[in-house]
Image 1 (tube, rainbow, N blue to C red):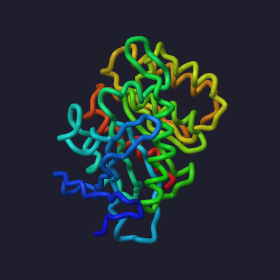
Image 2 (tube, rainbow, N blue to C red):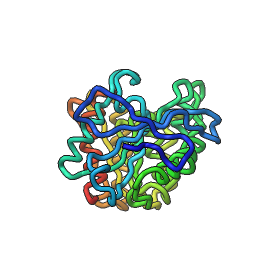
Image 3 (cartoon, rainbow, N blue to C red):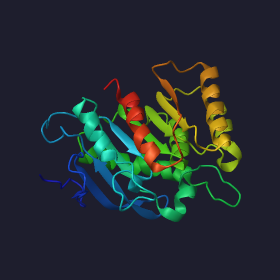
Length: 271
């Protein structure tokens, strides 16, 4: 299998210990011009990718890429996403999934467009510009994607959920839907609520939102408030908005690794 691309830097095989997983390739040290830093980008290709050379696929861009596929690079256990994607592929639900690694100490800055006293934030717009203007064009050049908005999605959990939610409004012309798992809506004095209210007239496509009921009560209350805000606006139908409360859910990678299957199924169900 040839993994080289028209770009000067090739995608390399990413070796994991999951033999049943989908094929993974990695692009190392991708430069973010606006943030002036580098990070790895991992692509998970559908099982059918190399067997059906005339087929193209929707794309899901996911935050905290090092936590998705590999326990050796994850913060506290990985999502086992490769296995989940393989299972979905065998059921006929397929997409290219792009895992964008965070940069550690700059994560809070990049995952919020709003500044929080003492905690950072404020670089979210530059981070999303990196996805929209650097990562997405690279992915579209290198793989057989369906680049149009209705088949381009974004997803994340915790702070990654916050920036993914914001992206649906800030880049409504790029992303046709998103999965927002246990979002950190509290960040920057809950500034995201004002932003959503001010932009509620924008069509954000398809939205999956969830929370675990073993998470802090304030987090549950925040997500329910967001759910009510979205529902009261009446701009999203049942096929466009899914809300899930996970009775056993906690704020951790293992929980999100379980729920992401439902999230991806919802986003891709029309594919």
